[in-house]
Image 1: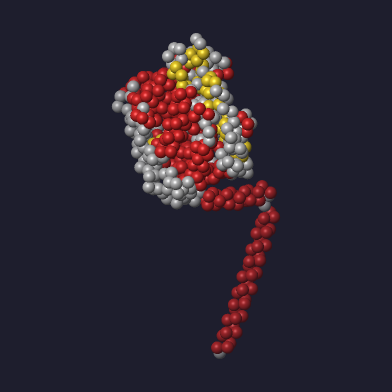
Image 2 (image 1 turned 90 degrees about the horizontal axis):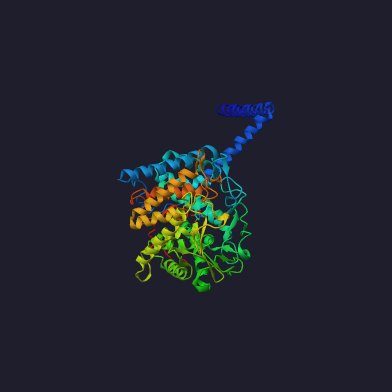
Length: 551
Ligand code: DMJ
């Protein structure tokens, strides 16, 4: 009986299996037939869906969270409401200008790097390479945040989550991408706490690292994000890299090491510093050009404006950002500023203090709009300066602010030219047609803001308001804000570009100028050269504070 049952059970099992195999075959046959019945379009759509699924899965994998680190104390990330009615109204007006710039970019340029406010379409330049990386979105995020424009901020965040991709065959400027994208993403991360910004900043930084693969470790000016191939600008003296470009990475790279625990970023920038320290400096000045193959200076040109500017700024800010423990950076800043004051800073016949440009032992009495940021830098560096010269540097900062204000005041539009001369009867005025433009730059307003924070002299708010009104009157068009080609012509022509730094810097500094000091207080925040606030890192007890063991 038992044997009979076992035999029967085996038979039933075999039968079940046979049925299952038959059913599977039939199902597969049906599916194959079904496929054959499908149109090409349907099959293509299915393949696309599959592809999207894979991309999505990869994204989730790529965007995996980084190891947690203690986040610095984030003081004053909102607020700053002024008590005074008039000041509050002015601040509101600046916020409205930001809305106008953003909304139009949102409508006509979304995802492009910048906006053409008159043509009402996207715009880009070679610094961003050939792809649409939404530079305005990334650059504007922290300004939106501090202004309380949270819906707009979220809109930008969504775009970044869904679209910002650095695996593109595109050659970008290492400096510009660092200050605008990495700086912007890090600031957005610290302000909002949203992991995605940190993850994107690190993804981008990894793509920039191949730029450092040069015989000296001085990075190339440009790098292809996909291939990692780097090169320098064709116009730079003797194949050189530019001081203001390779010397303006420190703040962001130290934060990257801090946030990731990976020292590679810190080591890259400290290597640059060490190399610079070893080099001879003619008259104590840093030339603007350095060849990354030979490690030799190019032309002996020194400038606190374009090509040199933010290198000096980052020495001071490295010290501030390290909670004033990075004494090496402070020393380099003090030495550099002393040499600059000795050789480049002069008083005009009319009594205006200006910063000229040093070219092969000759001082060109010309000052760029870009150099106007130095008024704020001198004021910011006054505290902690050598031999108790704080008063002197604050005064110097105020003099630079006055000169730069004059460069605005002596124009028809009350907006400053790109570059102005001090030559005989000509003072603080552009001479060449090619130097008469204003492209919504922030440096003069930046200096007003720092001077305001340190002195509370009402003249800085007044000067800032004059500039805001002039921008509103001459640069505002219905599709956004545009630069102007000639600040001396009362009927200006527009250049039809809304620069991303207008939202990142110009409008942010104006907003801060009409806010209380409790918004982003300077003893807790250090602004990168694109006005992206990064918190002071209390690194004294960690390996990043310039500990020789790490270097
Ligand atoms: C900005 O991108 C930065 O401030 C940079 O350091 C110099 N120039 C522009 C704005 O003028």
